[in-house]
Image (cartoon, rainbow, N blue to C red):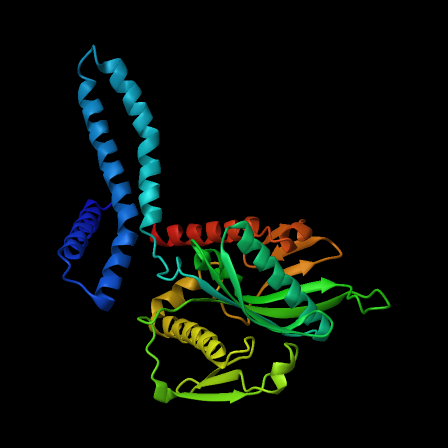
Amino acid sequence: MDAHRLDRIALRAEELRAELAAGALAGEAYVRATRELAALEPVVEQITALRRAEADARAAAAALADPELKPLAEEELARLKGELPALELAIRRALLPRDEADERPAILEIRPAAGGDEAGLFAAQLFAAYQRYATLRGWRFEILEYDATELGGVKGAIAEIAGAGVFARLKFESGVHRVQRVPATESQGRIHTSTITVAVLPQAEDVDVHIDESDLRIDVYRASGAGGQHVNKTESAVRITHLPTGIVVAMQEEKSQHKNRAKAMKILRARLYEAQRASSHAARAADRRSQVGTGDRSERIRTYNFPQGRVTDHRIGLTLHQIERVMAGELDPIIDALLAEDEAAKLAAEA
């Protein structure tokens, strides 16, 4: 491994600790420094462990010349022979390019695409599967919008998911999800194919995206659909248009116009942040072609075939005959495989 690079990392961590301890940083500079140090600390721990093991190996090699110490030295060298490669691999993994948004909460958006009522029904079921997954991992799942249909499906559903490593684990869920099954309304028993789109966006903080109020057009109107008599009497629904980008966010889930505006701004900020990330990181776009997916909503990523009881992720060729468990929120086998493939591609690129 590049010893000079490891030295620079350890030195940078020391510099950041000193700057933070001195209390000279504030605002955005403080946020950036704490984030950078948090990312470096695990790497520095691995570097320390590697250097300790290398020093032990040198000492054991020197002890081979002493007949009395030779048996113990040989035993120690054999142990370190297996330990050193593992430590080096751990450092290589720790030094892989990281998405700065990996540890952030996420905004999950699900909408029917092709397939009419059946697409809306599956959209509701997949949204519920993600909610169960969040519960299994101990994450907080807050529904921001749920536009239900009369048949029990959804026209669109949005949730905020918060917890450890949320975006890191969910970011590869973005794309087109296809379902193949016999709809409940199908009298001839024919299998239909429907699609829905899933978008997972990292939640943005105020320091990430500057939104000028003069760039916003805010319309208020009476909410429609289920929700009680208030929907016909008060202008609680909010539609925010970001004029420079044309991004539109509408929210009517809450009875309060103020709460709907706050939710809409949260979603707008996340969409602007993701657009900013995509446009400003040219290297990121190039890197993603060698990984498991681009996160593009137009990319078909997975098929849920109910008659055969299987789920197939097309990006990595993974097929599981566990559709009931997947729909019950047991998504880790798929997500773990996606993360492993992404890491393997990155390690190969760095070699």
